[in-house]
Length: 232
Image 1 (cartoon, rainbow, N blue to C red):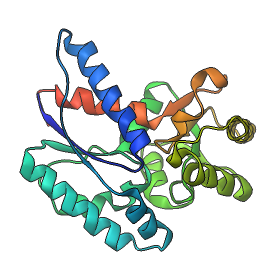
Image 2 (image 1 turned 120 degrees about the vertical axis):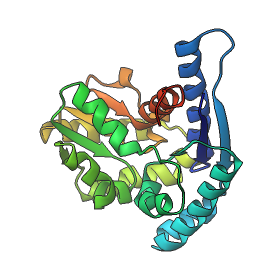
Image 3 (image 1 turned 90 degrees about the vertical axis):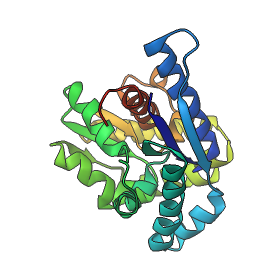
């Protein structure tokens, strides 16, 4: 079994989900007492969020690259960045290590294509929704992507940082997200990507008949399968 190098803490609530989901997938695949081989480096999210909000992506890349190098030196066979937003600096991180990064957007695109989805709504931080680093992976896979209007982008982003990353789950915020999802449906979306690893804590498939693709679950499942595959 390969050793998974998790870069987590962005936020720790969603990283806890990664740890649980990966181990559940390994147990389901291998049975018995099997669990995943994991090295976890959990950051201080306040530091990372400061670099995000100030636009200092170069510093973010430096910090996460150093972490990835430490995980590689400690024996990780591949890296899983436990957040959608910080995949913005995944190319810079990859340049500093010799082991692969399992990209969350590529894993999500594969899951969408397997279900025959062509046009998809994207929810996440304002960086993920409005910048190209994430959407380009979906577009490269042949998918059409729609995002909320400006007011929707701001509210979805606010709830992530002011509530979900602090472990606050509010019914009013769930209703707002469901309203945004309905707007994306009206814009032609056949499914919606929960493109922030905290959103799955708030909105679940049973809350809507719109197909939801939870990137945390998809990424964790992919990591587990990769860990027990014969080829990196």
